[in-house]
Amino acid sequence: MQSTPLNSEFITLHAMKRPTPDWNERLRQALQESDLAHGSELAARVGLSKATISQWMSGGIEPRYSSIVPVAHTLGVSPDWLLYGEGGKHATGWSGVREPGATRMIPVISWVQAGRPKEAVDIYAEGDGFDEVPVSGTMAYKLGRYAFALEIEGDSMEPEFREGESIIVDPDACVRPGDYVVARVDSGEVTFKKYRDRGHDRDGAPVYELVPLNDNYATISVDADNPAEIVGKVISHQRQF
Image (tube, rainbow, N blue to C red; front, side, top):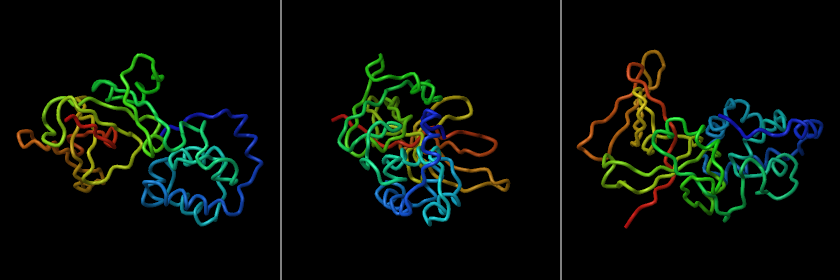
């Protein structure tokens, strides 16, 4: 997973500063208050090993400042608060983290762009020619940096999701069985479906299904012979009435 780059000189200034002895208590607190159920989910979100997160939480090892920045971003807190107990817990100015209640504008991208969403979001600036969806409250600062919105096309997810309605997708969110996802299939087409886990094949490759809600459409079976890639988890649905 990519994290927002920081000035290397700034990180160096923090390299000599050690976390407070109780920093791991703040880590546990932030994890409990997040939408992540376990340290293993945090590890998967930020691209670290489960052992590293476990050792951090137990106080067994101290993290590098550069390693803690994406963790703080994912948990919606400030790195300085997390490591040193300094400043506001939800300080602004860190990898897109904002105070709860602030409004964040999410770019609406095309289904073609959704096949490579990070490239589309990287060139996006608020008010810069993209359609946008406002998001506020807890979701505004918990969504990952590369969150985007799509306008639903077709009727494969009816009756729950209708054409013209919007969904917000987070490529950094952990996907569980039963979640709705946006995926890119082997043909390059991007599709919106329900995720059904089918375990792994004999070689350890994941096997799952992309399931439409409309019975008029076929389920897509994903395995080594028919690969696909989960682009992101659907976090929110804006209905039309």
